Image (cartoon, rainbow, N blue to C red; front, side, top):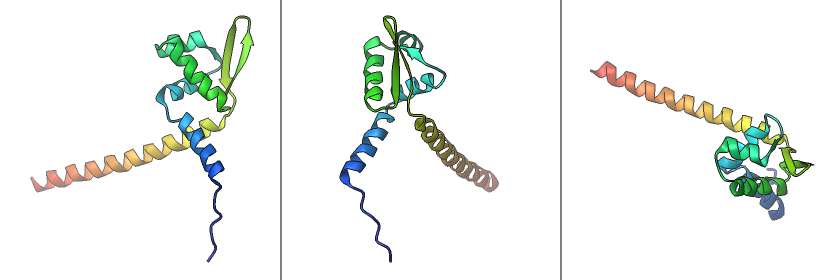
Length: 119
């Protein structure tokens, strides 16, 4: 029997930090918007209908995590996706969740049909 290699705690910590960055709905919304093309903070504030401080806080977290980057232009900075892996991860997760929901919906339909047959 093969013994699984142990993953070093440092690696597990980095993986957890990456997923932690992606675990916030506002950050996911910002990433989705940046997937359409680069945007400045003010554009993100207007679209998300949240404060500049809130958007900046989330951009900083994603910037430090290497998921996004910024390009200075005059007095503004334009943010863009640096790590396109997030879209592959998002696609995998969304497909997985859709499959789970479809299975759950089918179970509910079967329960409803079974109850209708009894009546």
